[in-house]
Image (tube, rainbow, N blue to C red; front, side, top):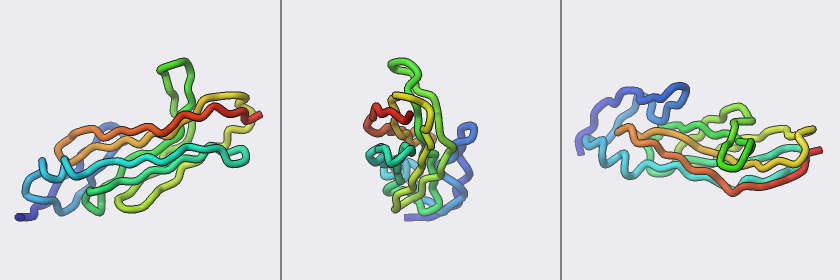
Length: 130
């Protein structure tokens, strides 16, 4: 397998693959690289979610954030953006105090070296945050 230097691939503020060494076939790397999403839950007044990358080059990253459902089928980012990494879980949380009863989920979004989008959403929870 021949190695070469890859360029940064980005979509707006989202960047999954930074400058890194990659297999000679970008298609090979794109197929192996994927995002993983964990279970979203409430802890005190916080909505908590987590995610990671698997099978990606070590410098790969993806955006991870909490979303609130505005109307059925339409979600809005509620939290700041955390950067998920290869091989370990990254957590993101949002203080939902004063928002009342809402539906929440976690979303992870990134792109492979070949430009394919990788998106997964977690379970949806409906909780009262006061």
